[in-house]
Length: 217
Ligand code: AP5
Image (cartoon, rainbow, N blue to C red; front, side, top):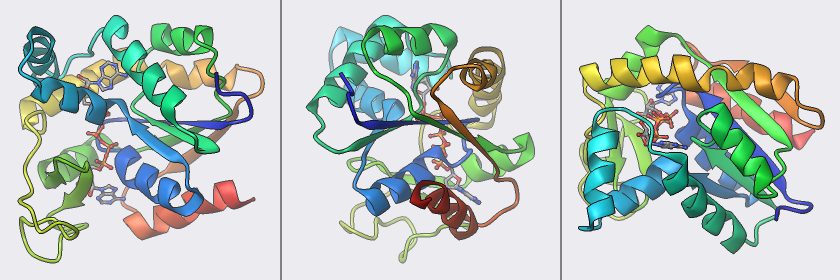
């Protein structure tokens, strides 16, 4: 399914900067940036039974079942003509990683962002997003030109409903139990290049330079 495509998995806690750096990578190399969080949030807005079910799961900080996420993701990968695909927020556990491989998607790179919990909380509490595009801002670290307004469209920015303190704590628990084990899974997987970056207390621009230099080599 992804013959000759570069497939990059972005791995890291909620708020590690996967969306921010994924967008920069996509812009620099023309690769498709696919965020399962964004895809599910789009799905959630539909007023269907599935949409309502998704809303409940995501607002509690739990993972959506693989049966829902994998077909949505595979359709998106199949539709892209870019030479590379950046997977932001997928896989989230070993079962998803195995399903990805079974669907013929060959991961070439894993980019792991290591960040401390206290920084996650301050990043997510200050985050604002532009819902239609998925563009991400931070009220202090990456503010829009006009407070509360998207730089590109002039539309209103909003808070994500799962960025409250108690849901962030739940998402961190889920990350530790389900997603963190993927690091050793990919460490041991032949053919995958694992790149690790310590991103705590570093500016977005500094991290971006390191990220781009990995793929410019
Ligand atoms: P998802 O949308 O994937 O959320 P997440 O993984 O929790 O990650 P975030 O989007 O919160 O953070 P990020 O790492 O992208 O950070 P960002 O760049 O925005 O998933 C949401 C939910 O969807 C899940 O809980 C689950 O329910 C469901 N879901 C998604 N995928 C699924 C799957 N595969 N299977 C099952 N369920 C799934 O940055 C955060 C903030 O920090 C921003 O404000 C940014 O401006 C700022 N910032 C970024 N970098 C820095 C820096 N270096 N210094 C200071 N501030 C920074």
